[in-house]
Amino acid sequence: MIRRIIRVIITLLFGAAGFYIDYVLVKVADLTRLSEVIGLPIRSFWTYIISFILFAVIGFFIAPVCMTLFMGLVRWLESKLIRVPTYDLVGGSLGVIAGLLIASLISSSFVDVPFIGPVLSVIIRIFLGYVGLIIGIKRKDDILGFFNFIPKLKGEKSEKERGKESKGRIKSSSQDYKILDTSVIIDGRIADIVKTGFLDGILLIPGFVLEELRHIADSSDMLKRNRGRRGLDILNSISKEAVIKVEIYEGDFEDIAEVDSKLVRLANILDAPILTNDYNLNKVAELQGIKVLNINELANAVKPVVLPGEEMYVQVMKEGKEAGQGVAYLDDGTMVVIDGGRRYIGQHTTVLVTTVLQTAAGRMIFAKPKGILEKSSEEYSHEVNVFG
Image (cartoon, rainbow, N blue to C red):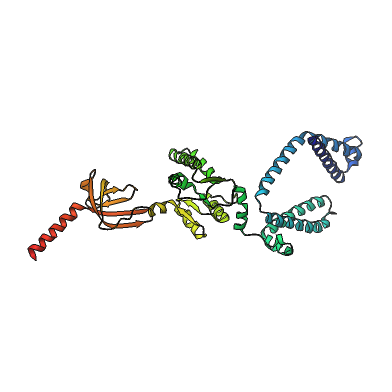
């Protein structure tokens, strides 16, 4: 029933538009002269009727298309307006009202202009209404400052306060959130850390991170595809763990394109740390005062302490970059560079640590085979006995 009423309204609107167009054309054209040219009498009354009927018929047939487009526009506006902060809506509405009031004063002087007067009036109203909207949103703090007598409009709350209030949309607000980055999900070690119980609170997985994982998992590159699928498997594994709670944040920041920037914005709003392995994201977040939990830094921190002079029993795996060097690895992946260890490739041997170097990529240990050091010590003591 409602659709039929709307269809009738659209039909009448199109008929009215046809009537107005005919009215403008009759004013422009000379019907008497046109009648002489055609040889038939033309009356303005019948032109109005024909134009009304013609446009009404057109409107009747295209009404379903108009209704579909209108409902799509309404849904699009609704999806956009839901994400707009309340204070932006208030400021923008006041700006539009002010712009339309000014436009009505200005456009009244153009109404009497023949032919283009009404068109100019509409254009001025649209333009000044849009200008008022932009100014209202940009200067909402100044506009709302005039309403200090209303307690709820005493300035806009900070972004963090709005984020804390919006935690209800993320189901819970009583526990701390830790936001997962794409890199730490793909890395996989987060699942083992969760099992140990060292992490508390709630792991928050943003929807835009899931979307990025999905794009990686659908990549044509096999390596990227495998990494993306591994990340999704890790998330499934974490979500099944009873040790910690996992939630999905379905919000998005459409004004920001990069996922890292969205993570920083979300962490700033919720006042929550970011779990990541990304070095650049780590630095950007720290510059903005956001706490970062870096899995690589955690791994380096829990590695066993090795001091110069200690003995280690390792297997030399390959040749080093320098001549005569061998390379071994500890169980945690720490590289051990053995000076003179090339001869022991493929063998287990005891080495003495000479230097421990901490780098941004991790820790490196430099050592020498114990046999070489003992031999050098015996040769030195023998020389001392001979010449001393």
